[in-house]
Length: 195
Image (cartoon, rainbow, N blue to C red; front, side, top):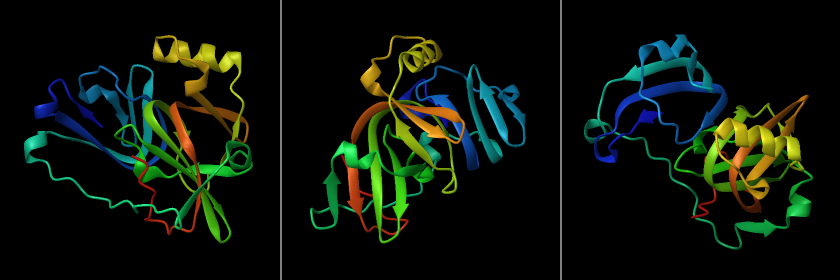
């Protein structure tokens, strides 16, 4: 996470290691303050919160920061097949944790010999547990979900942008555009580049 009043000189990076749970509006307008870190593994700002094994502020600008690069697998029709939404809703998904960012997020259902990946673009809000052992099913968005998300984000959010997952006994959310369900045989570090 980072504070970015000027995108040319991003500052006040906060590194979150081994994230467990996330509930945040992607473009929150907060200035970093050390008091936001409540304990070693919890940061809260406004109603946003991230739980992780460790959370460390880094005083460095964009110009001096080095970035890890994760190569995404470039999909070809033979490698990755789009399936219809009705079939895609039959799977239990977990958040594939290293693809949160740049407005794109991937959920994956491991299903024996193949995966079903669910992609979102234009992500503005996410409230999910992280980890492959945390799986949820995509369910219909109800009026109560629209009311909750609109209040949480402080603006009216259209129903078709709100996607609801049930994880055991809790409803979790992602706000964005569903780009589609894709069947593939990618290994863990391979991801479809949906851009």
